[in-house]
Structure formats: C-alpha cells, structure tokens
Length: 516
Ligand SMILES: Cc1cc2nc3c(=O)[nH]c(=O)nc-3n(C[C@H](O)[C@H](O)[C@H](O)COP(=O)(O)OP(=O)(O)OC[C@H]3O[C@@H](n4cnc5c(N)ncnc54)[C@H](O)[C@@H]3O)c2cc1C
Image 1 (tube, rainbow, N blue to C red):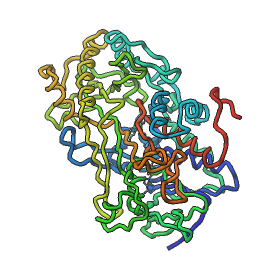
Image 2 (spheres, protein in one colour; image 1 turned 180 degrees about the vertical axis):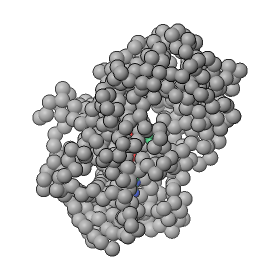
Image 3 (cartoon, rainbow, N blue to C red; image 1 turned 180 degrees about the horizontal axis):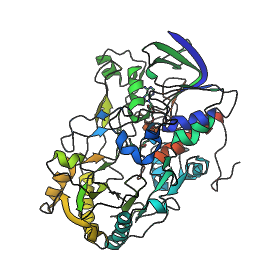
Image 4 (cartoon, rainbow, N blue to C red; image 1 turned 45 degrees about the vertical axis):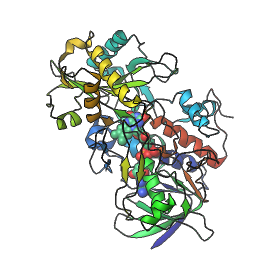
C-alpha cells in the first residue's frame, strides 16, 4: 500500500473535477491530486471530435449503468456515464444552456442559500469553455427547415442565441461548447485542464478507481483508498479537503461504500455505518424523453455539428415564465428503442425527442452489494408521478411533433412516420408507446442533494460540505436539489466555479462579469 498526500484530492476528473483542479492549482502553493477512473483525452480524436459522441456510448469510455425494472417506462435504457478525463463533458453533445433564473430560485426555496440567480449566473463570464451557437457551416438544411416549421406550426419565435436572455418558448440552433472550424470539443478537460497540465502542483492519477473513503487519525474523512490500473492499491490523503466529483451515480455510490448513507440499509449489507445520512442515493432526477421517427425521401446533406443541433421549447402554461416541454431534433434516426418494439430501421431519416424539462417522478439508487465492483441499482421510477404530468408531457410532445412535421418546409423532406405510426392516435395509445420507447436525455442528478441544516434529506449544506463528517465536499450534479429545465452541463460548470470560490475565499464576479 502506497500513501501520498496533497492539499486537495479530487475524486473524479470529470466536468466539475476539471474546473476545480484548474482553479485550485492557480495558487502555486496548493497541491492538488485528481483521481480519475478513465484514461486521458489528450490527443484522443475519438473523444475530442464532437461528432463522434454517439460512437462512444457503451464502449470502454462508458460505465454503462442499467436501470431496475421500470413498470411504467422503458426497462432497457443504458445510462451512459463517461469514463475519461473530462467526464461526461468529454462524450456528451455539449449543448450549453444557462439555467433559467427560476431554476435557481427553486434551489433557494429548497434551502440552498447563496445559489440565487444573482450570485450564480454571473459565473458564466468565468467559464473557459468556448460556447457558441452551431456554426453556419454545420447548419444542416433539414434542421433549418425544422426550425422554420416549428416556429410556424406552434407560433413560437426563432431564437438566434438561447443564452442571450431567458426565453419562455422558441425554436433554433443550440449553443455548443465546441470549435465550429475543427469540430473539436471544448469540454471541461479541453477548456480547463489541457492548458495547465504542466503545473508542478497538479497530479493526475488516471485509470485509478476510488473505492472507499477512510478517516484520518483526527476522524476527518480525508483518505481515499484507490486501485491503480495494475491492480495494486494505495491511499491518497487530502490534508485540507477531499472533493467528491464522481458524478450523480458514483459520488453517492462511493459514499455508501464508505458507510455514509441510510444506516439500516448499510448495516443490512454488512457495511459499518460512519454517518446515518438517509438522503444519500435519494432524489434521483432525470429528464425522460420519447421519440418520433420519420423516414426521409432521400439521404440528408452531411453537414452537422453532432447530429442533434437544433431544438424547440414550448410553454403549455402561458402563466409561467419557463418552457415546460423541450424537443431535440435529430438528423439521424435514433431507433434503438423503437427497433426493440418491432419498428423497422430506416436507411435515412430524422426524429424528434420530446422531453420533460421538470419531471415530477423522482427515483432513488442503492447498493446491491458491499462489493465496490458491483454496479448500484438505479430506479428512476419514470412516469410514476400521481398527477400524470410526465406522461402527459410526452403525449403532448408527440402530438406537437406531428404538427411540426406536417408543416412546410419540413413536411417536404419526410416520406413517412415510422414510429409510433399514424395508426396510434389516442392519448392512451400515445402514452403506451411514448413510455415504452422512452429514453433518458442522460441527465441524472440530485442523489446527494444540497439543503438547509434542518432538512433531514439534505446530504450537503449550501457550502457543499458533507453533513455529519468533516473534511469532505461534494461538487457535481449530485448536489442539485432539482434539475434545471435545460441540459445541465453548464449548471455543473457554474456550480464548480462557485465551489472553487467557496474553497479559496475569492469573491464571485459582478453581474456584468467584472471582477471585484
Ligand atoms: C451521452 C450524454 C450526453 C449528454 N449531453 C449533454 C448535453 O449536450 N448538454 C448538457 O448540458 N448535458 C449533457 N449531458 C449531461 C452532462 O454531461 C452531465 O450532467 C455532466 O457532465 C455531469 O458532470 P459531473 O461533473 O457531475 O460528472 P461527470 O462529468 O460524469 O464526471 C465524473 C467523473 O468521475 C469519474 N469517476 C467516477 N467514479 C469514480 C471513482 N470511483 N474513482 C475515480 N473516478 C471516478 C468518471 O470517470 C468521470 O470522469 C449528457 C450526458 C451524457 C452521458
């Protein structure tokens, strides 16, 4: 067993972990070690080329978690989670949305003082990622025609830049964290770590798996037991603090294996309880989606940033400021779930994936075994909210998608609706299909949620400190008390920038981005 010591140890060199590593090593006297389960992304074109993202799913770059039986949803979803430096920002589609102010107001209402929009949104000016609307050269003609048809069919505005101001509804090309000239990712790794890899105070332990946290002699939970690529084990010690950035599945998994979680469940597995925190693994959130697929008359022109470059937001409740239904438009037929239901593959086609921006069904995760190598159980409890809000949203989405498809100029491209097929029309038929063909937008979050001191389900306090044990903070999507209504990566980046300030005492930026 080898032991090494640093000021901060970051478990997980993913989206949040890269931000923290770069920010903390700005102080040359601060020694930081990053423990990352995956390989480096440096020079790896498979990872760095954004358009290759779909080929990384279910490969050696992916932990590939499955779900428990979903009686009201799709039990076959594979929850991809990246195994590579940069984490999910190295294999996702890099769609980049600021959270809505109301998304952050919800966090404050859940006891997260200091996470209000006035404090958090100015961190956008600190982000190092190159975030721009999809480049002109990447705008496929069919995606342009989707935007025009969606605006016409549903009476929503065309939006040139979704990050310019909050929008209640609209259609347009997304903003992406990439370089349109080269299609290179501007992941957390590329933007934050690559430029500072040679800092002497930064140590990267790649292909290294953290499997348990242990206390130091003072009782602070600052030692990490790790397994290296060659199978040997060691301990890495954080003299100041341990920062858990392993993501919404692996951070609670690591805490549970370390005896931090619901005491009765841990004891039942034979795990010694260090802190009885019932919220660890609870509040498993996601954005569920369904899919509607068309065969096109001809093969499509090839230009694209990553094949899902445009989208649509709809607000069914005009009394509310935020959209409550979102669609991605794919320039490829995404038929993994429809083929399983017996629908044919198509040689060329497109699809729309209506999703639920504020899903009300909430799941949980737990350990199946005390063996750290065994994957945890993820039960998203999709479409189980008693009001039927999530199911209703899919049904409305499938109907609206048909309206858009029936509108020029998109309609002229489409040969036939392949799934669900025009013979399915009633609410019940669309709900049954929509839920069985459902997928994830890959946004799990919430499993170590932040909250006030008197909230028994909170796992970390608003300064991200683990409750009941000293020496540990959690900084990743697991701390979200609720999911933002949009794709969450930028919110993770903002949270990590804020966390860096909480650690260093640096003041946050002013609303106009100027520094104090
Ligand atoms: C396929 C896909 C597409 C997506 N598309 C988008 C999108 O377009 N826009 C958007 O906003 N969001 C998107 N998301 C979601 C978004 O990428 C994530 O919510 C976000 O990146 C999560 O950041 P994180 O820091 O919480 O975790 P991650 O980025 O997942 O980082 C966790 C890191 O910890 C490492 N790790 C885990 N456990 C251990 C351990 N025990 N020991 C050592 N290392 C460990 C992992 O290897 C990983 O590098 C997508 C996600 C996926 C999977």
